[in-house]
Image (cartoon, rainbow, N blue to C red; front, side, top):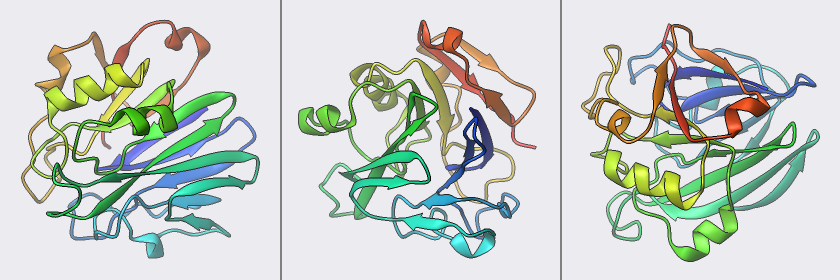
Length: 210
């Protein structure tokens, strides 16, 4: 599979059979270029403008925006209820973590997760091969909490998201603190091809925003 970072918490995941999943598309107030891409499935973790702007997408896509188990175009999807903060949603509301079964690998997108996972949530999500994780703090988990989540889900390929970059219009922490915890590779491109060899040990891959 190929995973392309479109900015912020938005990724395009393409299976070997060409099924395209887009996560958390954002509107033009965020700072990144609008993710005007075609897809088959789109997931939104919560209803904030920087995560739910599906109008920019094209194609005959299905929107998944709730908790539950779904099977769409040969892709199994599980939505797990979490919160956008550490006070059970009192500050910023609910958040949905999505787990995708793509090409026999488990890909987890944490959305705007705002807390360490509970035992029940960890069991529902299970071990993951690829983890798309917010690390910028302020509105989500910070670098230290992100490390704990990586450990609890036994993630191997870790792709940070939702952190401060030059295009982003609002304040978040940079990715740098998170990179202290595991070996990492900074790529010079916005996409990565996931191979079986990459799943042997934990490693961070920082995708380049173009």
